Length: 93
Image (tube, rainbow, N blue to C red; front, side, top):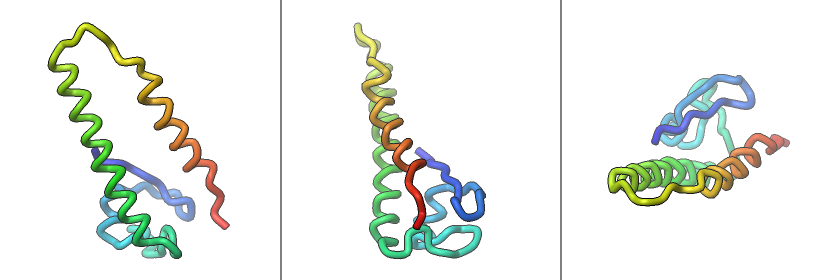
């Protein structure tokens, strides 16, 4: 899964992969996106993309099986929305 983000400083969009490749720096202005925890940020971004890919692939495999049930979408999307909402609420100091 390719995750897109946008810089709070510039408003420009970028792929998370670009931040990973740049060691945690903004691909547009070269400034750290999290100066104190760059290594943790990079590791977490990689994990988010990998987890998203695994979830997407697993859901596709389940769908291919044609089971006699449907997922309650909110049980999957709700926690993801809450995490995304937290990210949007974070204020840069």
